[in-house]
Image 1 (tube, rainbow, N blue to C red):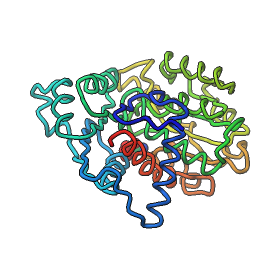
Image 2 (spheres, rainbow, N blue to C red; image 1 turned 60 degrees about the vertical axis):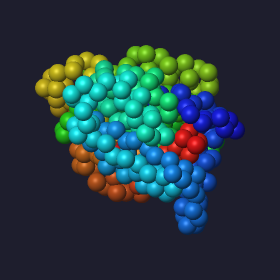
Image 3 (cartoon, rainbow, N blue to C red; image 1 turned 180 degrees about the vertical axis):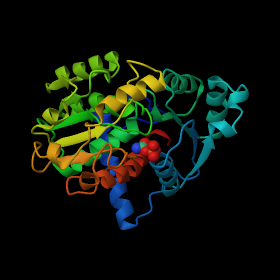
Length: 329
Ligand code: CP
C-alpha cells in the first residue's frame, strides 16, 4: 500500500502507480461501506474544491459535488462561460488564484488538442492538486470507477480476464476518445487482456496505444487490436467484459461533417444480444453513460442481466471521494 498521495495531481491514468491505485480502491471500498452504514466520514471538513467545467456533465459534476459534501467539505460549480476566462484569465491565473481560494481544482476540458494542455498549465501554476474530470486524452476517474466495478463483479485478481474496448455507433455527436484511451492504459496493470476494436478510421492516439502496449508487456498481458470494418462481434469472442462506446474519428479528421459521414458508415456497430452471445456467459456490459440508446446499444442489453452500468456510475462517487480524501488533506 502506498499512501503518500497528499498534494498530488491526477491528470493522466498513469500518474499514480499500480500500488497507489490499489490504495485508492481500498479507500473507495471503505468509503462505500461507510456510506452504506450511514457512518459519517468527514475527512475533508472545511476543505473546498473548485469544479471548472468547459463541457456539460451529469455524473461527473453530481458525484464530485455530492462526494465533497459527504467528506465534510464543499464543491463550487464553475462553468467556464460564466467566468472571465474568455476575457483573458489565463491558465496561470486560474491555477494561481483558484489554488489560493480552494484546496483542489477539478477541471473538465475535452476540446481536442487543448484540454489536456490546459489542465497541465493550470497544474503548473497551482499550489493545490489538479484533478482531471475528463480531458481530450484521459478520463481517469471514470476508469478508476470502471476498474472498481470490474473487481466487484469478477474478483480482485483479473489476470487472464479479457476486456474488449470497442467502438460503437452513435449518431448524436463525435464523442471524445478519452474513455477508451484511459481503459487501455490502466487495465493491463491489473492483469487484464485487452482487445481494442474499431472501424479502420477510428484509431486512438498512437503514443497512447504504444504506452498501453508497453504496460501490457510489463505486466505480461495480451494486447490485441482489431481494426476491421466488421470486427465488433469477432472481438467479443470469449470476453469477460464488454466495454463498447462511441468516439469520434479524431485521428482521421477533425472536420465534424466528414467525421459524421465516416461514423454513419458503421451503424451496424451496435451492441445487441446476438453479438453478446459469443462472449462468456457471465460477461458484463459496461458503458460510462450517457449512451445513445438503441443506437450504440440495444435497450435489451443496456437494461439486461449483463449490464452493470448503474453500479459503474455509482462507483464514480466512491473512487472520487477516495482520490479527494487522499490528495486534498
Ligand atoms: N461518464 C461521464 O463522465 O458522465 P458525464 O458526462 O455525465 O459526467
